[in-house]
Length: 453
Image (cartoon, rainbow, N blue to C red; front, side, top):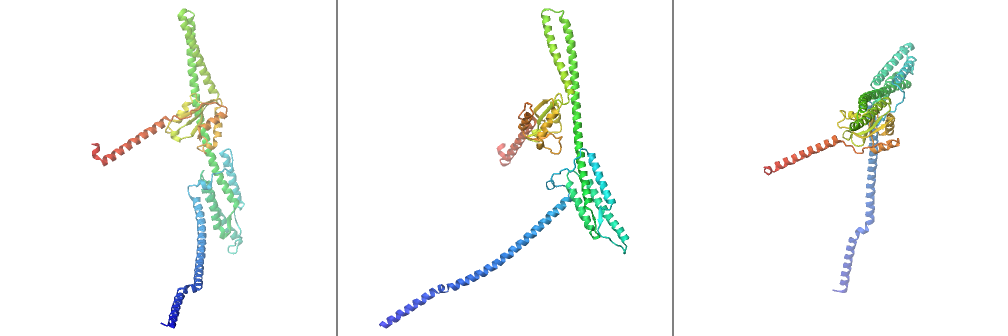
């Protein structure tokens, strides 16, 4: 091989190597072009996605708007339905706050009559409902006025009929409903009368609302008067029982006093003629009779005093955990000579278990003490509507502290005995235990029949 052949071969190898390198690094040479292409594709994809996102956002906004509108429609419809439902949602409408504050139910009736007279006056003066157009019929204004009067009469008759039926139905728990229904009736009737430009006056609507309110508050006051009358009657019955007790105690004490006086008179006559041991024994007997006479006279005086002093009595604190649970106490008052008799009566038939007495406080001003305690725990009454229900959701410690604040020292029994309740629980527990044992025995017998034979 010559030198030139060697150079030629070398040159060919270099050319081959160069070609291979070119092939190998061709992507690197075209990378700018590739990057530009990829950026363009990414830009187009981003643009498309941006369009899709905007469309989605618009759809979400549209759906959100539709949802809000639908929710508002639902709420309005629910309110509309609620107005005509028989039950009232007290949470939605709130606790009723009285508008009028008359002392007697008759005063509500008198005010209601005055309001009805104002309504009649508006009808007579043709201001209850009005027409804003001077209509003509067959070119006649007179016929137009006659037609308008008929329309006004029909509108008022419809509205008054609706109002009267609602006022009759008003109860303690539906006043807000009835007001809303009167307003809805007002709106509906005025809408029907719009074509003839006849409408009921807002002032007339206001008078109807007042009439409804007065009827409602009249019913409330009437109920309260009934409760107060029941309380008075119960107090009278309690006073009569106490009076009979006092009279009986007084008669018994007078009988005892008479017997002791007779026995004393006889003993004093006999002692004059006796001497020695017999004289001494009779003297001791006379001393005993004198003491017994004194006690009988004190009983008589006490019974007479209790009968004459209507404010003397006992304030009792009682509980019934079997019937009402823990921390529920009744604070009441009795003028009975034996105050526990009153507590026994309360636990006779109205509750499943007997009451436990935690305190029996004698006071010269028992009604005043009872009222002070009731007033102190006003916001803790179990029944907020009926003041005759003297049950309070409090602790015994709170009652004891309040009694001390009045300056009275009283002994309190902390734990309720609740014998019947606790024995009932024990019986139920035992019954339950027996049932469980029977169930277990039955299961064992079912699985292993031979084990019990």
